Length: 99
Figure 1 (cartoon, rainbow, N blue to C red):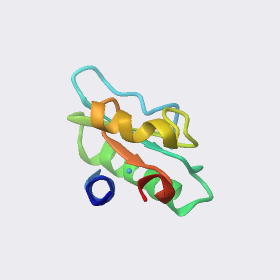
Figure 2: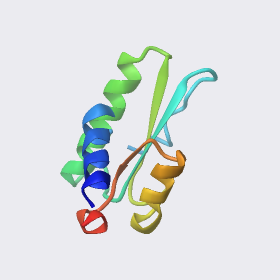
Figure 3: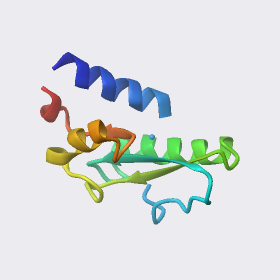
Figure 4: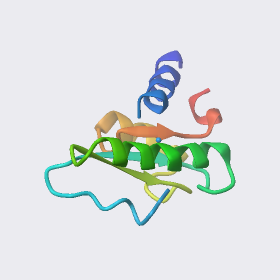
């Protein structure tokens, strides 16, 4: 149980608005981030939106972050499997899922 929690925490710290899933240009590395909260009221969602904006500004066409809130890409039951399969690069599921 410790490894998935560590992986999630490291992912959140490393790189976190739906903004119609930020438009990524061809050739950019796409970073998909799935979480289960809304982007304007929950601290996790607000942080995800701010991280998406920062990454997309700072990476200058090298990488593009897409944030999928409210379980729009994966729900709690599927997000860890998607993370392990490489279908999503960052995940912030409910803590009960990793416990």
